[in-house]
Image 1 (cartoon, rainbow, N blue to C red):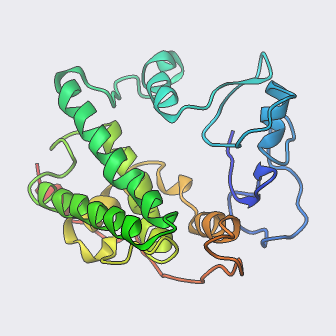
Image 2 (spheres, one colour; image 1 turned 90 degrees about the horizontal axis):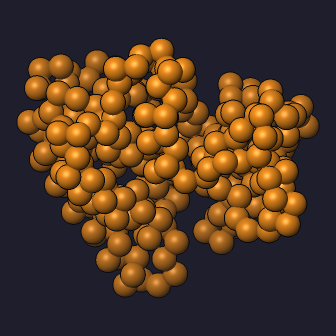
Length: 252
């Protein structure tokens, strides 16, 4: 099920029209086609009525048992890569290929420690020195990836693997949220020619653009992190176009 637009900290993520046509704060009907939930917390409560911890995404919901069976991103990625192959349109897609397994695992850890989680270390820092350490470490990692992607179309030259999508999730949010809201502002992704082209290349893969809604992304961060943005004002920019030709086809 598709979950978008967290508008209240106590209820978690709200089920909203993924077209983004419903204005923030407007009354709405649930867009959860399975249970009619309005907020993701309802799924957690249906699974465990005593649940009182954080409501996180993603979740994997079992329609038969009517409960959440997993909420770990790493587990769910592997499950969809392997366990659900019989339901897949393209059974030949493999994002965890065996011949690169050790290097892939090492790179995924590097991405998580320095980039995926690095933006949060910087953004939620409450003291100057920890913020600066996290921010500099983040941009050192981005600089390293910029060099890597100067000669390789993807992180592993001619194939898209899980690490690419792990990186994509942070890159696609970077210029619209992390650069300003989290003060990760040494450079934007658009200032990195190879990272920007790589981001556009992944964005233009079949079906990916339909999963990205910049309005929802911005409202999530700017409206729920009241310690960072107490006014809850959501910026109207920046203007991004990830549909332009990226030219990455020349790389192998």
